[in-house]
Image: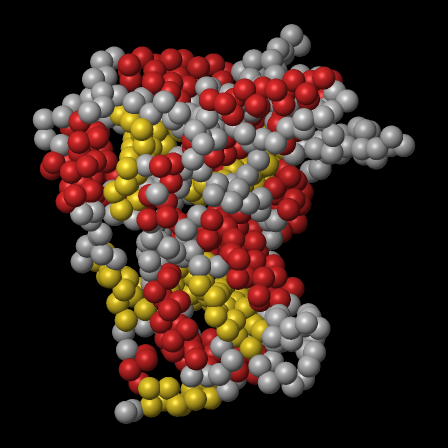
Length: 637
């Protein structure tokens, strides 16, 4: 047996360079590079290996460990899980910073490889700088925090363990049914230790993504179910995009006249104007998709995890039977469904062959629902602030609107601003988002003109994904404009990779919606009977955070980083900024002052939020009663 003497870190780099993925005969390199912030726990191990012989791996210097890892998640998501980045940090706080991003990856089933440095396997020295000591278990380190949020976790305490660990890491990273974060902990002394690795460990490894099909028995049962129903609806989830089943879904819907609604992950699998595309469905869905869903007698959940937002806390599909099509058996078993465990594309094709002669009984229902939503959308896109401004969008108007207007002179509502973007962005521009009220508005009102131009992280709804995610998306799609749609609260939580975008000469565009509040949660608390408590950005007075609104010039912040920036408070200014930003070669930020409480809400879906049973406020107790009444209508599993 021929061997090669390498350190563990050198062997790891060499191994990553030899990983490939294959689907439908198309083969491509799986690991594209490494995001890193070096520290004492990885710089002389993995850092040395990457400096001397990185192979084809591109090394990116991050600014915040969570930020760089969120970029890696977004990259893999935009690449339909065919390409990934690894992320490495030092031991301690650097590793802890990546835990949130690991959770984002696993919640969304997005393959991302985490390589945190770890404490000394020899325990000499002990404790090392940044080490946490637990008297009851000396084997615990910060990296154990990755266990609950990883789909596979391992620690390399001896050099020869690297081989089985990395083979298993690739098994999970390339498994469509159970992928997500993979964490390989690398003690800093072991990284630098040498071992005679067998040469075959470094041979080219191709991971074939087989299109698994359900059994004939399961298919026949599903066909029988579909044929017994008159008004089915398909829920198009992220699995449609990852399976690259969009054209198959389009043909299936046209053949059997079945409409579909989109989840956050499934949106833009097909353009918005497809005849059978109803748009966003669920709590953050629109009136068209939700109206058809409520009247449906069968829901075909295609590549979706059926989260509470998609199902409106299990109330939206209460009167329908459920058929799941999912490569994950875990997801296929949800809600007591009839199950087809298999690849979205292959399963739709198999169903299509067996459903010959079937056609839904929809007449003009779909057309009418879409026309009604189009009319409502035009209204939302036209709402602006006036002196007699009324609760046309979200309700809960109070003094804050006038206060915000006096301070900013902005007449822009959130829906008006999105309408401007919808009109003026390039058709192939990719929008990125994650948290706050923007995902709700975007799933409802955004109209993707081209496929795969919507990258929304809503499985974990992680504040801070937006700017970092935009960088990851840009790396995946360098020839398209990328726009991060981000609220002021989320921007302040994490935007450090904006600097990385400038360093890497990867232009991204930040559209920052500043309403001086955690607006989404402000609306949530007020709609359930509370006041504005701890969600608006106000100066502290004697009775709490009740002073004036805190103004921030976000354009100046980004200008200091080297971005081209704009501050806008009117449609004319916004249009001019968008058009000028397209001409730039450096990252841009448009600081949009958006009136509070002007996001979308409702449209026939309910969301279960725990409302107190006992309160001094009658409005809260009434909201609790409303919650109980809605629960009675919902499915139980």
